[in-house]
Image (cartoon, rainbow, N blue to C red; front, side, top):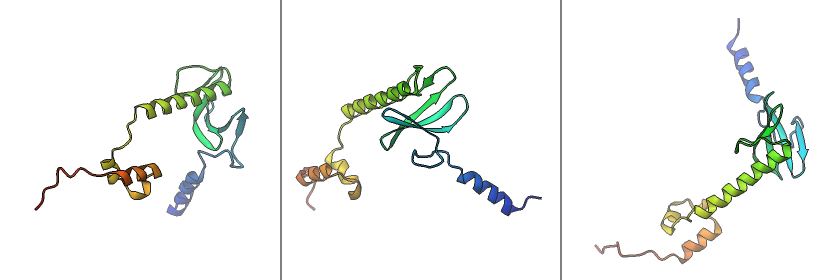
Length: 139
C-alpha cells in the first residue's frame, strides 16, 4: 500500500531534479568551446545543450549523430562552435532588427508605466514633457 506521505515524497524528489543547470553548478556537464560554454540538459539523440556566452544563456543547440543544429535556422553544422556562433549571430541580427523597427513609447505611455520600471532616459523625457491642454475644459 502506498501512503500519501510516500507518494508526496516521491513527487517532491521529482521536483528537486534540476533540469536546467547553470555552468557553475558542480553537477553540470559543461563543454567549453572558444567564447561559449555548453551545458548538457538532456536527450540521447539529439543531445540538448544550453549555450552560455559570458554569464548569459543565449539559447539551445542540439548534437545529432552526424551534425549539430541550433533550432533558429535549418542549417546543419559540423562543429558545436559553428552551431553556437550561428545561434549568436541570429540573435544579434534579431536584436538589431527589433530595435530598428521598434518605436520608443510616447510620454503618455510612459505615464502609464510603474515608476520603478522607468529608465533614467525615460525619466528625463518625462521631466521635459509638457502635456497639451487642448482637451481640458474649465468647469
